[in-house]
Length: 603
Image 1 (cartoon, rainbow, N blue to C red):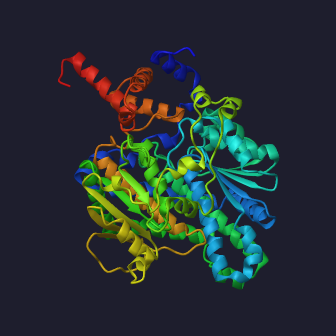
Image 2: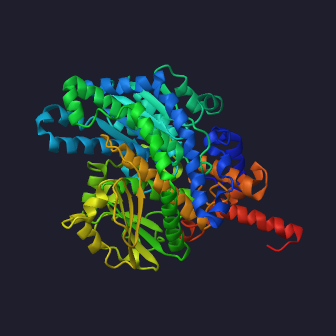
Image 3: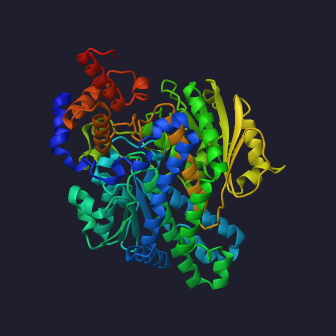
């Protein structure tokens, strides 16, 4: 292979990768409400938290429009038909939406598992419904730990994954892409269309803008076989951070559609009495929309904002002092994964590392469960055995994958996943640096159960946390709890629904706010831009380039060339240094230093 210079690589990207130049999309732009976010986080964290929360106000009006649309009606109708006739609903996504796909699938499986325990009389049909959802995440379930570099750039990878999932004519693929342009997710749509399956495509940019600027998006948006749900709410609280409002909107819409569909199926199979017994009579889309409004309002109540600000200060001070946070969870382990995994590419914090890799830097935050071993924890988290990829060099070559993957295929199999010890095995690295803290993250009824005298989870947590410097509690609950030292309790109403939609929504909104504010307080944001973004795929190369333009005040070509120069320089760095240094931030510092030198100013 001929090695190209950074200038050649940059010009190649500028001239021939225009389909990944995404600055025209609203999700990639700066939201006017949060332009001074990083500054406000330093001076007034509570007000900064309200700034972050204010962007969620963009969602309810769009939600009201969506649930009245024929596209939403068709989504519910297709889900109902597929469930009724024994087909499968495949949720597909990448990154944050891939983790959302897994959450929807796992939550559905848990609902039927719990229902069968309480109502064994319906086992004859509920057992089959329990296996009628599936999740296809770009990179397989291993990507829960970290997004697989470059995977999302390849349409054929998504197509292959959906084919391996066994999609067929009687199925429905619900493809979810935050921006609507993710190649691998679009690949899953093509696999569905190839076999005649129904397709709904959920995304958060205006369909007309996507169709004008992104050819791969236009091909599926304009296909009459694809049911298009444009959920666009505008820019994110942090520019480009679609793990925030975009994914919240997609969780809402996909979740309420599934709950509406399962209600239809149960009414047909059973009766109105059974519908009430299974708690399905109070989760209509309109009721869900009203409860979401209430959740947003309650989260910004004065007491909750003060609680969040106080916790953010605690966690940010841990990180600023070089310390570590380890979350412990039970039912919401996957929700914490979704947030903490996204911190690495968004803020360039050290990613999760395998237990047997002592050379990689320690992740600032990690998540464990005190009740189960690692293998059992993974199975419980997913509500089934992990679905991992075992592709070989020849597979990547057949799909025209990148040379690096053909030469050295990434390890994405189940054994590689189990190297990440999220179970109750002692991990002395988590208290090897000070300060450190074990934080019990519990939601809904869990805090009350945790405080009961015979709580197995409580006993297990105390055992797991005994070596940590401090033991804390972070609770989201609708129950009045006695105040106790070391506990932050956020009070919100959490209506019961089959998917536990409001528990997951509340956990997501709280964790998004905490991670954004805590890492913003230690300098990982500039205004409302990801100052330390990763550059591990084509979309992130473009985002990094635009960030350099914004912060270093140079043109796009200069920014892109500098970024590729930095990426080349970083090839010779130790792995530990590469994993904690953002090429975008390094490029900005380099350009600012050069500008100061030219002007004669001090660097």
